[in-house]
Image 1 (tube, rainbow, N blue to C red):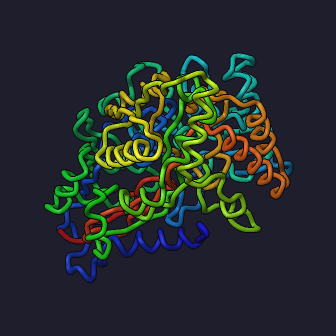
Image 2: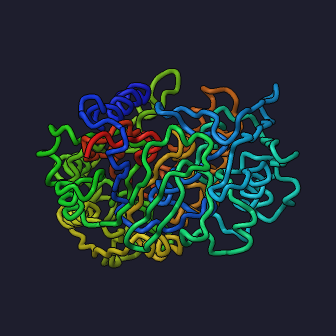
Image 3: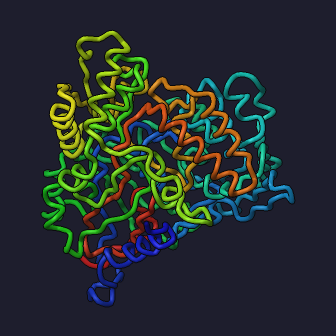
Length: 537
């Protein structure tokens, strides 16, 4: 299996090659004649552009362009200082002192201050905010107690000492803290803006941010428009004047829009066109650190029974699914954590291996045993819920067919629009539901965090104290080998109980117009356009 260090070089190459010719080659150059505008496809409405409340990659894609944290990422995907000009770390690794850039500005021209970060992080942790990603801040001293109503906000380890100085105290040293801070949950928000209008993040007119672009238009369910933020401290590296995110959910439609040049970049191609496009210069496949899965609600029959959950897992032929249905280079998943984590002694996934294999006969046996344990002569009706997407539909229909063929079970399919779907699953109003989880950094812990018992993202109702303890121990373990061993043990507990059915590990496929250059394709985010440039019409 390729290491992410190798994959990252591939991604960097794709960012430069798939984007097309240089301005010299194009004969157009950047002399002002080329309109620096780009149109991409977000596929759906961003559910929330508030950094404290967003939980999805669509919202994150927009926010990564209009906000910037203390750290940001360079073209190679490595964390570098962003809104902070300096970071001093104490000898014990538990205290960070950040200096905010003198030229860090909000899009309204006012100064970004250390207090903006303190306010933003404590707002995420405030139980009244209801942030589903608050647990990412639990590394801060006193953060978990405050978020769970057991501590005071004054005890949270983030303090603005003055306008430019932010001091952060951690519970324990964290080797990847700089990369974690590039996540949108750690972005600053402007206190006055937020407190003056609770709906500040719902429209462009009231939106204030501090990134390379600013939000200028949001026509809900139609488009989001961002434009170059002239107040951004590093605006000289930003070439595009305008980026439009369209919201076209039908894969065939947005593929045709790309072919007719109405869209400059699309992702998740219709599976039936992947083969014909693979040799195109416009096509690229990029590793994506995440897992496509079906969650089981362990409080809803029939998935209250572990043997039935396992039967539904073993009855899926992942090799056939990725080869004949998705067709975009995905890797069949027999565990939760994807490949790509270099432990120093090898790849985490290769070391952990597969936890099961597709086995129809064993699946039938487990289904029969589970039904007998529950006293069921007939399996309760099952509905698989997924968010509206042509590709999700094809996968769901293939899995539906496998269950019919391999288990003799008829399941129903139900689709919902993305925002509604998120509400449905958050309310745990489902039996079996599609979900994808992408690591905000390439580390097993951010994947495995999904199924923590108190994680708002864990919508399965599954809670395992041993799993939670192993995860907690791993987060403070300073010995690298022991840390990875604890994470392997945690994954083993998860895969024993199987509150979910892993389907495949992602690969993103893209079509990109060849008159753009310097687009970056991260392994755990959507394309980053900070340096993108249009070199010809």
